[in-house]
Image 1 (cartoon, rainbow, N blue to C red):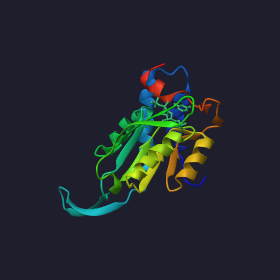
Image 2: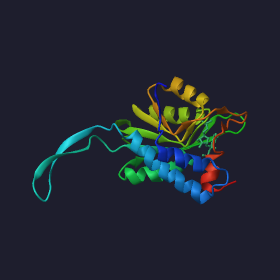
Image 3: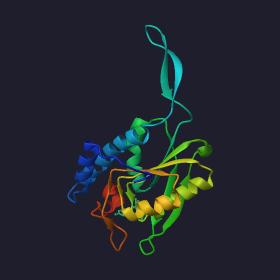
Amino acid sequence: MEGVIVVDHPLVQHKLTLMRDKNRSTKGFRQLLNEIGRLLCYEVTRDLPLEMVEIETPLTKMQAPRVAGKKLVLAPILRAGEGFLEGMLDLVPSARVAHIGLYRDPETLKAVEYYFKAPPDVAERLVIVLDPMLATANSAVAAIERLKARDVKDIRFVCLLAAPEGIKHLREAHPDVTIWTAAIDSHLNDHGYIVPGLGDAGDRIYGTK
Ligand code: PRP
Ligand code: URA
């Protein structure tokens, strides 16, 4: 599917299966999300440009590669995106963080913004938006609109699970934004939940239900 990368690495698939299990504890769920976050971060940063710099090893000078350009921005959609952040920061510890506070109105399923804080020069950086769940995509579309209103041009979206409806909506609204996901599930139910899915990600991460 154009613009969608399914990360089918066996470790990702195995950990996702453990997370879907309704008997998984809050602690286990959070830890697995952290671990998958690291693996997805590895995939989403796979094509970052490199530049050669001169360094000196204990033996000699050499030209060696390092990631070029400004530090990237990780942009979790609160709350559940925050669960992804820790694992990603393990791999990219100097990344900047933009917090995007959105919740889904349970009746209309529309995204309601309650917080936004990004680095002042966010427009000059690659921004990776994080949210474990892409359901209707109302949240992802609103988050990316908010970033584009700040002139951000280079945006990627990473989730754990996506519904076909959400992928279609996000690709139509923001065709320039590539999606990385560990799986594409069957459909959304009448309440906008992903089926078979894993339930409410925020509640499962934070033990609020
Ligand atoms: C969940 C999830 C996404 C959103 C996905 O958040 O973390 O942000 O729903 O649904 P959508 O694609 O239909 O917009 P929720 O609104 O439940 O808030 P929470 O993370 O604070 O629990
Ligand atoms: N948000 C969730 O946390 N889970 C879903 O299945 C859909 C939206």
